[in-house]
Amino acid sequence: MRNVSPETITDTFIAYAAEADDARLREVMFSLARHMHAFVKEVRLTHAEWHAGLAALTAAGEITNEARNEFTLFSDIFGISALVDMLHSSPGATSSSNLGPFHRPGAPELPNGGDLRKGQEGEPLVVVGQVTDTVGKPVPHALLDLWQTAGNGLYAVQDPEQPEMNYHAQLRCDAEGKFCFTTVKPLPYTLPYDGPAGVMLRALKRDAWRPSHLHLIVQAPGHVPVVSEIFPTDDEHLDRDAVFGVRADLLMEYRQGTDPTTLPAILAERDSLGADFWRVDLHLRMAPLPGSA
Ligand SMILES: [Fe+2]
Image 1 (cartoon, helix red, strand yellow):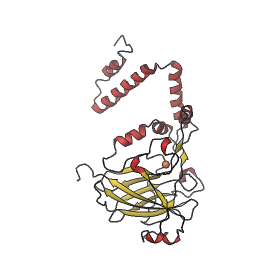
Image 2 (cartoon, rainbow, N blue to C red; image 1 turned 60 degrees about the vertical axis):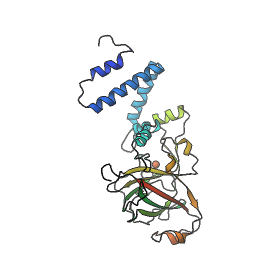
Image 3 (cartoon, helix red, strand yellow; image 1 turned 90 degrees about the vertical axis):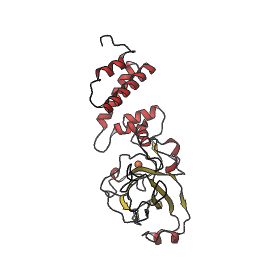
């Protein structure tokens, strides 16, 4: 093309890349170019705005390291991560939600009924639940990968005072998919907002807060893994989650007033909880792997 114009530039991009072998790559990149060109034309992007965008990406590269990825943060606060999660949730299964940056592979095993709190600060919480398939049939021996903030609102990797892998655990459910453990109520926290993603949040007068949540991954043979998080119904940040992670089926009520003697007998801390503990009941649903039903 020797006479590129705003009207022809998208078709020109597509013509230049028409020989690309991978059909999916062509589909994704052509669509991306179409949307980006349309965006630039719609807002009549100025040189100053274009430079500001490039400067934000440059700053994101400079602040990114092993423990922090500013590009992931941009993906999260634009809602891209949440959209990818939602588009690939299995119908009837527990909704997908943010993996986030604090998952640690190889967390220590926690016996079913075990205790994550180990006497640490925070409000005691008993989690009781069951993993079933999408029609309510128990999924035996599902593996839960669990992680959350400690009672001070920090993940272990953010806090040198915490033991490594504090509040990270893998728990194997029983033959009926049932599980329970004691922990503390996770706390709300803010995303890191001292980088270019924070500049964007402030400019848009948006919250950097995430509501309190318990992260989990559920895995079982023959089923689609679920990556999700559970939110208490009374958290004040539910309607402004900075990363768009809240879904109706992930809201669970944290209640007080349970008689400890009614809790599962395998709960190790059952007799030492006192009266002021919280309880949440989780029903996690998994879809069968395609072709395995
Ligand atoms: Fe988190």
